Image: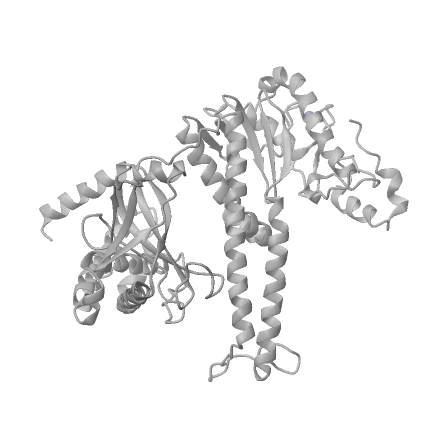
Length: 543
Ligand SMILES: [Zn+2]
């Protein structure tokens, strides 16, 4: 590519970047012959992807083995330009770039693969392979994964909507019909004309189409092909997604405190709340764990030789362990995959519900910036289940769409969980201490709710909390915080289980109140009735 055309291409990219994109997914009606051809195309795509991945991996390894690589790494990060130039020289020399892999793809695509794959589709696959390899190159991933024949390629996409894989909308007397065109096949999409999301989406300009293949719950499931796959088309559309008219937009400013399993909200005007985040997912997760244990048992039963006398998996020696998969195991694995899909869908709907609940109150939200990655390490299970980072991403997009903002203030300047507005002191609370109570007379208040209150009145321009700033608001806020807390106690008294992080123990058990007490342990022990002698030191907070 000449310099000039490269520049034009860059500009084209730039121009595309500036228009927002949203996705619309439609199921496809696929007959047996079409399904067989789709499988063939996707299999060609898989082999091409693996070939590019392997070529790229070879180049990456050669590049990293070069002594110049270590030399480039040794350049201190402060010398930004030099470091950048050194790495760029290496990448050019070894042909490790998106563009070079596109070029490599041109060579690899001739042969039978070209019959199945258009040049543009091959390019998007090469880009995908490059992105996977680049993550390894930058140290963000350990290794790349080749696609096995069994798993296959589950999606393939185009870059444009005029050639190759593309979607066409045809007006008909009975309503709009839509088809995904690929090679000689014309696959009809199921269009629900009563769904405003679908009709709105089909009115937008299509940027490109993506074919998705998913496992159905069983080969006999409705719409599945012989191998038990279902097909969907995902359209990348220009514009912003449809917002349902039932979703109202509030004008309040809301302070929030998101924990690994809870969310505290404090609107400046409305009702404060502390709720468990995505609590409805618990039963789904339980079912998943059960299936996981079942798979473990089935695997063990089918491969007794792979375990030592203590029941541990044998160390892998020179010979790789071979694992047999029984029919039952495969069936459980399918059920588990289906359960995982259901859980993800359920989580998405819960996230959406919460987002709209918040936006209905107000579309300016102030929270402390959290590292979800660090959470993932500390609370892996809970964070993996509830996906708070994904939720915040959704909230950010939704408030932006409605003209508001999600303000994430840096924790190090605010330290809301340590601050007391009464005396201005920063006192670090241990994680187990769920109450804010200060010698200056503030509190006791549940700490997450208190943080949310502090966040609600932060000045985004200067997010350092100051006492004078809060004094005027405290009077009105205290009652609302107390009300939020009383609602929680009500729930606890009704016997609803609440997470321990709320600092409210079950009905009948006594609540520890003094901040000098190791509250969590105490509550925990008391509910089990083991530590009667400590009762005297655990008066409930005076609310
Ligand atoms: Zn204080």
